[in-house]
Length: 380
Image (cartoon, rainbow, N blue to C red; front, top):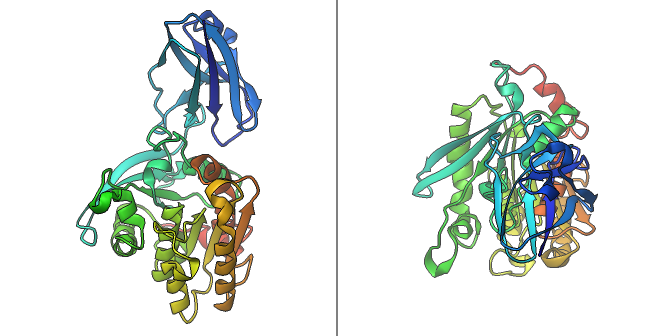
């Protein structure tokens, strides 16, 4: 016999709602949703176990509340083929559910932009909110995120198979009138390795390598292309740039160096030390902030760090950053907000949980009633 444990990370909205595994075995209901294995909600995930004969091939699908109309779909809204697993030994099966069939809204699309600064193409994933297809006169703020493979699709997220669920957060918070509906642009990095066996992703983002050119690409090439192709609000205060770890470092650098383009910034577990883990005093981001006589009025930056793993040592850098921002005239809770997340760690699952608070501060209507007033009624 082999013991199989399911660990399922649900979508952001109502994550506690029941998740079932329905499949070809009697223990999974024999494709009868009413008798599917109902998992237990436990510390943010749904878990359950069955025993099967060794050598069996498991086929199954994931459902919400045992309803085929609430079947799990992929990041594009498509119902995927049956999940399969050949079982010879005990196993733990992990899945992140991108969304449910009866809730999926908005539209995810591929796009690409050629960059002279980077001497090549950058692939994009662009999510258009539900109202984009129904209100053709309306324009939208734009949220830009580095590490595009991690932003929407758990299947393309390296290693962890957990995405940031940026589309889910925007859709849910916009429905609550907490933030505006927004277009999300996720920038994908080349897959491969360059000189010194540095990944092409690191070359894009590291300020020690190609990160300055990449930040120029974001501000001077990508943003104009997106403004030309989509119905955007082409104003500084309606553009946000964000990321996690090294992606956060580059995002915040781009927002400082190109403050006339990006008015909002999000940094989750920002890797201030860059690839070489240099002392915070040598951080290019700190140098960029220090070199500005004054920072842009009305900007909003959200930064956070956890207390576990790699994030455990990030406190001093954030304290130093807070002091530097205050020296430049920024006020805590107004232009910037730095949060120490108890139990937070340096990984996609933790960043996924934290992204909602980051969006609420950086583009939230309760934090910025002027933004809400300006967005109402913006049309062609």
